[in-house]
Structures are given as C-alpha cells and as structure tokens.
Amino acid sequence: MKGKESFIGGAMALLVSSVIVKVLGALFKIPLTNLIGDSGMGLFAFAMQFFSLLFVVAAAGLPIAESHLVSEALAMGERRRAQAVVVHAAAVFGALALALSAGLAGFAPLLCQLFGEKDAVWCLVAIAPAVFLVTVEAALRGWYQGTGNMVPTAVSQVAEAVGKLLVGLVLAQKLLDEGYGITGAAVGAVIGVTCGELFAVCYLLWSARRGVWNVIFHRQKAPSALPQLFQLMVPVTLGAAVMTVSGFLDMAVIYRRLPAAGFSSAEIVAAYGAYTGMAMTLFNLPQALSNSVSVSVLPALSAAHARRNTAQVRRLITSSMRLTLLVCLPCGAGLFVLSNPLLQALFASQPRGIATAEPLLRLLGIAEPLVGLSAVTTSVLQSFGRPDLTVYAMTAGCSLKFAVSFWLAGQPEYNIAAAPIGTLVCYGVILLCNLGSIRKLIHWTPPLGKALFRPLAASCGMAVSVLWLYQKLEAAIGLRVAVILTVCAAVPVYFILLAVFHALEAEDILPLPGGKRLARWMRLQ
Image (cartoon, rainbow, N blue to C red; front, top):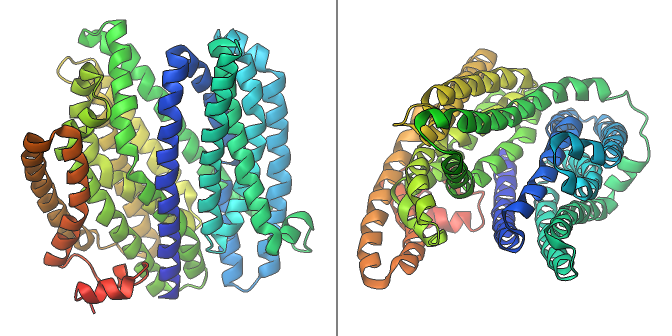
C-alpha cells in the first residue's frame, strides 16, 4: 500500500503543477500573440520547432530510462549503482546537449537560409542554450522520479513556466517599445523560454544540495550505467520521434488534402488554426492528469517488478488506470456536451473559428480517455524495461492515423474532421497494442471493464446534468457566468454520482489530502 500511496501522492503533485503550468502557458501565449501577431508567432514557433527536435535527440528518453534504472537499483538495495546512473547521465548527455546547443547557434544563419526564414537567426541563437539546460533538467528529474520524489519535478515545471512568462513577456514588450520591431520582440519571447529553463535548472540544483549534489559532481565507483541507459533510451526516443513526426505529417496531410475537399488556401489556414488553437487547446488540458499518473507510476512499478512482486504490480496498474479514467472520462464528457459554450466563452471574437472547432472538439472529447489510458499503459511497459514495445504500438497507431487522415481529409463531408478522427484511431490502436503487450508479458489483463463502466455512468449522468444546468443559467445570467458556474457545479455533481454508482473505492481516496475524512463521509470505510 505504501508504494501505491507514494505514486498517487506523486501524481497529485505533478497534476497540480501541470494545471498551474498550463494556466501560466495560456497567460504567456495569449498576450504574446496579441503583442507580436501572426508574423512574430511564426518566428517564435520556428525556433521552438528546432528546440523540440534537438530535445528529442538529446534527452527525450533520459528521465524515463534514468528513473527506471534508479528505482530498480534502489529496490535491490544498490544505492551506489543508482548514483552512478545519475553521474553518467549528467556527464554524457550534458556534453552531447552542449555540442547540439553550440551547433544550433553556430549554424543558425545557414538553417534560416535553408528554410527561408532569415529573420529568425537571433531566435535560434536565443533558444540554443535551452537545449543544454533542458537536458540537465532531464538528468536531475530522472533521479528524483526514480526515488519516487515528484515534488522537485513539479516545482521545477512551475519555475520554468514562471520564468518564461515573466521574462518573455516583459522582454518582448521592452524590445518592441525600443524599436526592434516584431523580430526583436519574438527574440525577447524566445529568451524568456531559455530563462525559464534556467530557472528550473537552478531550482533543481538548489534542491540537490541535500545530498544529490555530491552524486552529480563526484563520480561513484560503480559499473558504467551507459549501456543500460542507451538500451532503454533508444526506443523511448524513437517513440517520441514517431509522435513528433506524426504531428508534422498530420499538418502536411491537412494542407495537401483539403484543396481536394474544395478549401482555398486561406480557408485551410483558418481551419487548421481553429483546430490547433481552439479545439486542441481545450483537449490538451485534461492530459495533465494522465501524464502525471504515467510519470509517477513508473518508478513504483519498476521497483515492484524488480522485486517480482506480482500482486503489487497488478494493484499499481489497476489503480493507475482507474485514476486516469476517473478524471479523463468526465473531462471528455464535459468537452462533448459543452463544446460550444466553452469555445464561445474563450474565443467570442472568432465566430468562424468556433463554428469549425465545435464538432472537432466533440470528437476529441471522445478521444480523451483513450489518450489517458495510452499514456499510462505506455509507462507500464517502460517500467517493465520494454519501451521497444511502445515504439511498435506508436508506429502502428501513427501509421493508421496518417492513412485515415489522408483518406478522409480530401472528402468534403469530412475535411478538417479527418484530424480528430485520425487521433481517435491512433490512440485506440496504441491502447489495444499496449494492453496486448502487458498481457503477453505478465499473463494478466488489466480489469479495464470494471474500471470503466461505473465512472462512465457517473460521467454521462454528470454531462446530462450540467448541460441542463447550463441551459437554465445561460438564459438567466448570460453565457460566460453560466459557463463558469456550470463547470464549478460539475465537480460536486460528479463526485455525488460516483458515490451513487459506487465507482470509488477507499484505496482511491485514502492517499489524497484529507482522504480518511472524505472516505468516511462517502461511507467507503
């Protein structure tokens, strides 16, 4: 039970930080877009694409691989080996990232010339140090996650978002006022991203002063962990690369196929903007929980698997899937029934975009639990030391997504809806492949039906209730206030229905703050 409480407590810490980070991210991007416009955001996005690509190369799989090895070593009582993992990861991948940062800065003029974005040279130079900084972050976070301590990771994520918000917006405004134009303001925003990474690294190093500092900077006498790190990192990195390439292919399909559905160039840009800027913005918010659960459950599962504690492994898998469904199902149901009011409240000045985004958001609401469960089951396989199986699943899912999107996007009756339909297919395939792999590895199938039906019933009941409530409130007090009150009311309504349908168990409540009191109030004890 202790391992389960630890992972749920870590998931809660990461969930809170993820929600804060998403809010701060919105407070950064919305004013920045108003400040520098589409052209400036294009320069900003150009630099961020290179940053994302180099991060995948340098450190995408580092925290997961390091976390697995550290938790496994600690479970076997081999602390020196766990410390050696951190030393080797920080030294080798830090040096690789430093070389990539220098290369990006040095070749910035050539890269911008190749892509026809000559104004983005200083944006690339400004983002280059962030590649090194984010790799150092990954090494430090891998240690903390491996020990089951998610608080430093959570706090560093908030520090990163705060630094980006404060420095980026202030510097962008300052450079714009000083006459450096949109290009200078975009550089200021990119510098804010780099400063955010610096803030996060400084916090993690400060946090490491209680003992981890010596681990990082003083080599321990232990066998090299690099072979194992590379063995685990390569498939994880390939998986991240598959999903990154899938995003580019998705965009390419939409831009290349929508003309066959009768869309002009301007209509394609507007439709894709509504999909990514409106529908995907709301769709991504609930994923804060599934990502938190998947990161938190990995070290606990790795330790239980290393001890060959089959009962604990099964309990952790079941609990992580239940916790994910308990949040993703109501969020998906809420997005489905309140898609129009939510979009109207947030993007009232964009009626054409709302009309495009509404049916897309409904489809994405259906995909919400699939995305959450895919993330958790991917983490389960990684904790078993089989990230290669997740690569196969992601490749299969992304390939089918590309095929479905390519086929449907050219048909007038589907057009831009091909993108969310492809997302449904992609994550459905990934989930089925992951479940099949889990069954093959441990000869046991997670009881998904038991974890699904009662929360689904509660979610559907909540959705019907809040839709009725919104319609009554909107007629009396207006749209925005009605949306706020409806969303606030959805939480207690959902918890009441969970109790009515007996969808919660005491073990889901006890690890939470005030869990014992809440469990008694809900008569779970």
